[in-house]
Length: 118
Image: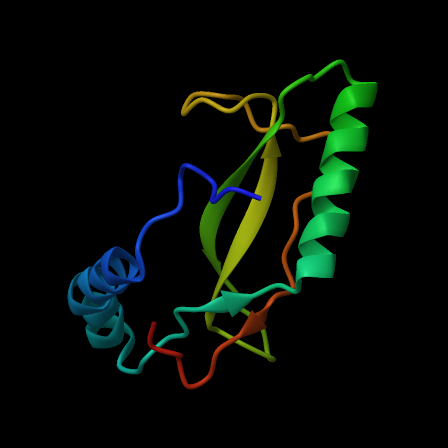
């Protein structure tokens, strides 16, 4: 199988993650008074199951090329006040595609704590 065209090098990924940690991550730590999580893990089987669900539900609605938009989010409950991500199905793949509110989003990842540095 050929490498997907949107893959980036490990070097570039490290640079992007370092940029985030030194700018936004530092601001979050400063404003919260403590470090927040910055990495989230979903298993391949969880991702495959979610993608199949999005594809099937989207097809039922006549959406031929659904996408997934990733949102930063945060818990605010007795168990956690840490960051998380939401994977939200969209009705297309461009930057202005509508969110498909008729297909449930995905959450409940494993959060790295303390944060895992890429």
